[in-house]
Amino acid sequence: MTGVLSGVRVVELASWTYVPSAGAALADWGADVIKVEDVKGGDPGRALVIGGFTRQNARADVDFILEIGNRGKRSIAIDIKSDTGRQYLGRLLATADVFLTNWLPAVLERARLTVEDIRAFNPNIIIARGTGTGVRGPDANKGGFDAATYLSRGGVSYTMTPFGTETPAVQGPGFGDLQGGITLAGGVCAALFHRERTGEPTIVDVSLFGTGLWAMGQAVALSLLTDTPWGGPPADRLRANPLSANYLTKDGRWLAFTCLQAGKYWPHMCEVIERPELATDPRFADHESLMSNSAAAGEILRDAFSARTLDEWRERLANFIGQWTVVQHTLEAAADPQSVANGYIQECKTAAGVPLRLAAAPVQFDEEPPVPQRAPEFNEHGDSILSDLGLDWDTIIDLKVRGILA
Image 1 (cartoon, one colour):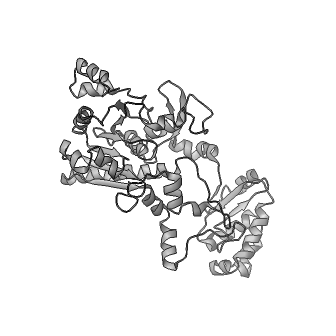
Image 2 (tube, helix red, strand yellow):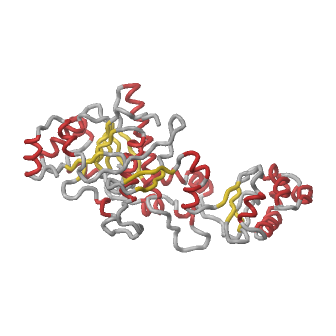
Image 3 (cartoon, one colour):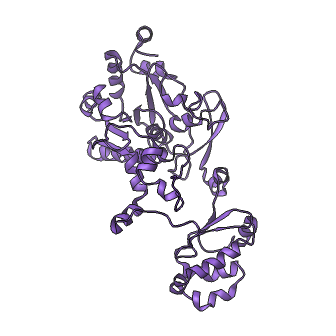
């Protein structure tokens, strides 16, 4: 793959998954991403799986969360709370194109890392900040995680919550984090392009809350137009368009149809379900008639699909001209022929050489998927990064002894 960001250096001061995943995407695209970690153990996300905070991993030797958010980076541990450590962070920032952080505004101010402070180290650096709810407003200095800030506060949970269910739906780990991260990575690329064209460095801000609102954009717009909160229909209620709905097969699997031009696809669907006479039935003769009699058409389809297994329907729908798919679980999605053909899942290895497979960054260049590299061990590249900054070995040892470096 073309390393479109080759030559771009990113200094990352961030933890957990959201903002680090932006750095991981930038690394996938060729950037040199240097992860600055605390000397007392580094990113707390390093302990999320291996440390037992989550029970999601049956393999104690594979920290899949760390790999997803930190692949392809270099790691250095600096005590930036000390004046000397802050000085060396400044020297590192002076070599960078982008400063990427999820530290909250008040924390950055206490650390003397405001926009003015950072630009004093490097007047041309792009500053990219990922926050929970944004850098302004009463909650600007409150942290956020995707389950609370993206899914719940952003209204996303209600799109997946069955009608009448009191408990909002719970999504997979990092669901909002990874969407927010790829959005922030895109913002960084736009800022790099702007600086290339104009010479002006910019500040990039992305929040989990704002990303959730963007993801819910159509539902939000409809809600504001009608002054009615968005809520899905009852699960058993047929939609106005019978060819934009989900149907259960005989063996308990779901088929999802999204044929927005129902009248165009109805005659072919009648052939598929072996009811050709329904194509000329006055109730379903054109799009308008079909919409007016959607309940009857939906009942016919519901009965038809429930009479055969998924494998039978795969065969019968193979040449159906409308838009449809099987509702897949994660293993099926990873093994999907389209996933394989396009390289959406890539092979990787941990620092210990343990193999694992990861979802590739979703943007490809020159028709090649980005190949993820492994995540760094804590402070793995500290000595080499400092050497590149001009520090001799005696100075590095002295800083380690003083606790400024790990």
